[in-house]
Image (cartoon, rainbow, N blue to C red; front, top):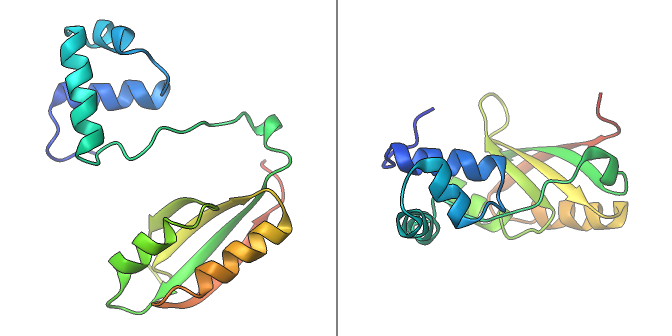
Length: 143
C-alpha cells in the first residue's frame, strides 16, 4: 500500500513511528539519515496535515484483561458515510473503524472498561444519523 502524497522519507518516518510512537526526534533523524531539524519539520507537517492523526498506546494483551472488546458491523444509509464516520470517531470507545464490502458498510472495534460503558457506546453509535442497522459481537478471548 502506497501512502499518496508522501515521499520515501515521510513513509519511513511513519513506519518508524508505527514501530515506536515514542521514538525521539533525534533517534528518528538518525534512523532516517536526515538532520534532526528535517525530521522535526517532517513530523510537524505530517501532524498538521492530518496524515498522523494521533499518538496512542498499545497495551500488551495480558494488561487488557479488564477491557471489554467488541466488533460492531454497521450498515449505513447510502449518502451519509463521511458524516457518520466523523461522528463515530467522537465516541471514545470506538478504537478502530474500517470500511468494508458486502452487507455492512463499516466495521468498528469497540473497547470499553465495563459492559455498561460498552452498552452506552452502542446506544450512542446506533443513534448516529445515517446508521441503519448494526450487529455486535463481544470478543471473549484472543486465540
